[in-house]
Amino acid sequence: MKRGYHHGNLRQALVDAALDLIAAQGPTGFTLSEAAKAADVTPAAVYRHFAGRDDLLAEVARQGFDIFAALMEFAWNDGKPTALAAFEATGRAYLAFARKYPGHYIAMFEAGLNYAAHPGLQALAQRSSAVLERAAADLSRHLPAGRRPPASMVSAHIWALSHGVVELYMRGAAAGRSPFAPEDLLESGLGIYLRGLGLLPPDQ
Image 1: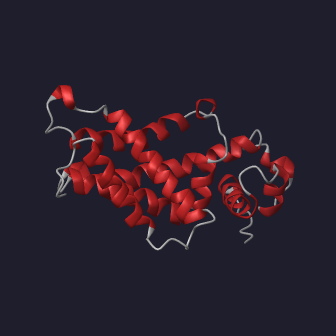
Image 2 (image 1 turned 120 degrees about the horizontal axis):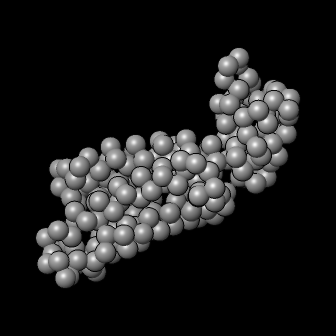
């Protein structure tokens, strides 16, 4: 859908055009000139805001991480009402974001961006992962210090599990064909993983 350019909002119009192109052609399937055409501006106008396609994709990803981090922090809610409930809520928030913001999600995780090359992008990505690390640390507080798994490892595993559910059962070839909802797959996977680490008793 062509949104067009409104005076004073060219940068965002280009981001919106990129989101449409990402959805239709993937994160590397379009040129900056195509983004300009979709935004109804000349290619020369684009270069006043973005040095190239990666720069535009980085802005799409930056906006996505900003939304994503806010959703994760809201879901975590300082570990309330319980550490487990908050942890599960962050997993559901991950899936909800991927479902509602597919263009941002693809730019964030599938465009092959070098986060360190784009100011602010790395920090926003770390803000998102920090939520899962805090949630993982809260879940293991009841264990003796010597038996607590590294929170960074737990959060990385949960991130990988969440991403796998998105790719295979929300966006991949199996999307819509699983007998289980993505949320149920993630919740059961979380339960098995956390029990295996001793973070949950068998009856939870």
